[in-house]
Length: 321
Image 1 (cartoon, rainbow, N blue to C red):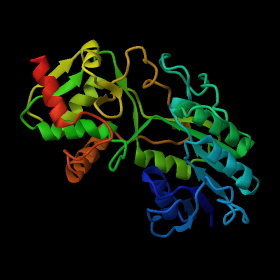
Image 2: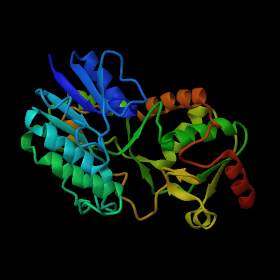
Image 3: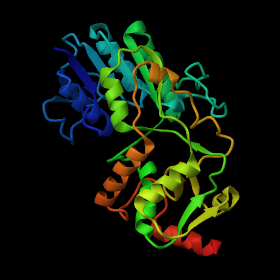
Image 4: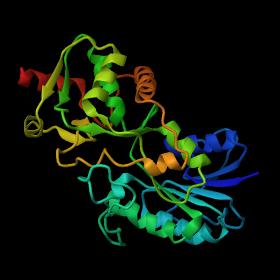
């Protein structure tokens, strides 16, 4: 029986990884700060990774597999120092945000990375991931670095992909504001596909865990169709949106999936290594259907971490009219 330690295991992605491993017959222990339960069948060690003694309760045994998802390099390097000698395999979930080149279309795992973050640097997500990767890659051929793109699916706490499902659902017969999408792509991976890959692959090295690139215009149209939106779709240009305080990609008062026009490579990266390593991809339409059901159940007007409120959207539509 495989013994797996998940540094996390109670969150959106890591919880799914834990459940996949449990179904596959592994014994799973989660190390987390608490506040959320571990998946049924997994044990839980409550520890704060800011504490130098965080790994004391799990460092005295051998592990067949350690999985870490942290976006803080000090947490990752501390875990490797404490547990690396006792781990037969180590998977670190990084991000395509580790890459410094966001312009080259079809770039693979050899694309240049950001300089790694160092102690005392102001926090930046990409450089933190690179520094964390450095710590893990020191384990040599025992290590897998997974670089997902935008992770989507039901229960997504980032609200980015789900924003569009909510926007079309809440509007019903009324208009929805969208960015100019011609020439832009979107590239996502369903959380269930990513969890399956992490829990089953035997690959090592670095792998871009991403879906196929699709025209953004087609994806938004597919979301609209699945939501049965019957209103007008109102397109706003980049300059107009920026002039009116609408942000790219994520966060408050944003239009998710919309990126600066020069970031042509961010959502068009190669996934050849992922497919070669056994990674599977469900259709975008299947993911959209699951997200539509989830957003409808969670409430399309709930507070969100990304996107426009309906009132903000209405005001922008009024200004465009």
